[in-house]
Length: 391
Image 1 (tube, rainbow, N blue to C red):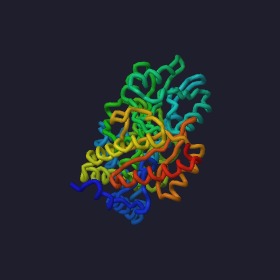
Image 2 (image 1 turned 180 degrees about the horizontal axis):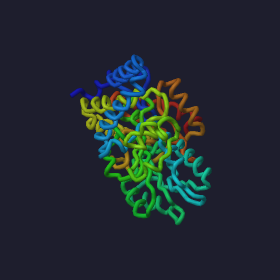
Image 3 (image 1 turned 90 degrees about the vertical axis):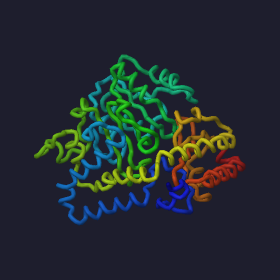
Image 4 (image 1 turned 120 degrees about the horizontal axis):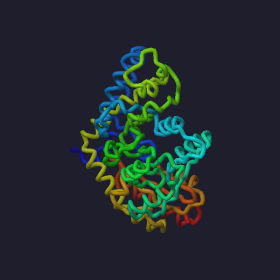
């Protein structure tokens, strides 16, 4: 077994950067990137055979590997998409919402998905309700109480993140889906940050729709995500891009796959690297890597809360926190602070707004060590002493 610190050599990241932003776009290790190039070279060697003929089986093989990894009993209930935003738009555009219907969500969701729901609900004269969640989170029960206080006779859908982007917390989606189903709601989960990050069993959540990114914590090349749809809802989903899969001349056994897999010419090589990602993680005991990273995240959190004079937004344990954590920070210009951290201190770390709050979120993965967090702490201390960008 290779110690975690020695896995750094597998990653292609710049050596002069303290990379603490794995959560945004991930990073692909060299062995997976080489497999990606092999698929691209195979595509270029015979593009017609690759795209029009052999590609269907290549995709089926990759979906089968993904299905086994996330415990999806039928690989045909999965289709690859470029990103979770694409998946959410596919679902939102297809849902038969009527004027006055409501989609229930929280006020700590990913901004791109908020915008997608606003757009599609406005077109259908429906309402996207961002239910206020009490922070700090103290228990699953309190979270569920806050969430379902937003239900009324017009509520038709629950949309919720499995791990939030800005606040970085793991939400109790299994319990939320159970309660929503008991109330007759359609359940949609944005699990962008989940696969490869925390233990994940898709079948146990029982969501009607689930989307996750493979290009984040699974470390696939960029633009590799999936959409899961329960069989009962697959016929409802219209293609976001209408192409040869719609009313296909030679339909496959699955309209779901035809509509959402056959969307025109594209390089889907990234989708085909998922088996290589799974093999890489297995070869390096990724459960231990994830645990070590989690321990580093939690072990250093206290000194950042002390420095920034703020409090955690959830308990600091593995029920709520994985390999990343968001620290509330008092900054009047977080975008300027983020650029200064990068340009002056060579620290790649996101600062994000959520309504009136600002968070700095650091992520830890196999290539990180304590020196990265030391550098971030020192930089924040120096900037805070100036009394302008941090107060």
